[in-house]
Length: 120
Image (cartoon, rainbow, N blue to C red; front, top):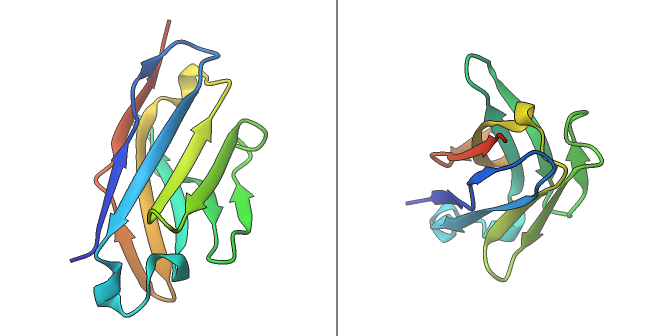
């Protein structure tokens, strides 16, 4: 059974930093190990639609939304089957539940999400 488990969420003050982690397991049953999967972070703010935040491909190319560019950094450690989202200069509008997503061709897996709150 493939699982994605997010961690690292917290309440932080504006301007602060956080690093989210997403630990993956069970990918061996899919026939493709973790390193073969593209990974994304999404978020859903209160009362808003889910939005894409950042991606890292299997070849480690990275992409960012306009809101994340210059402040967030996505990375992966294939030896630990984990993807990270380093967030800096956090703003109140970054408050959301953050979700980890793994995708390959037409197959997607989702984590349950982790709360990040930015408030003074």
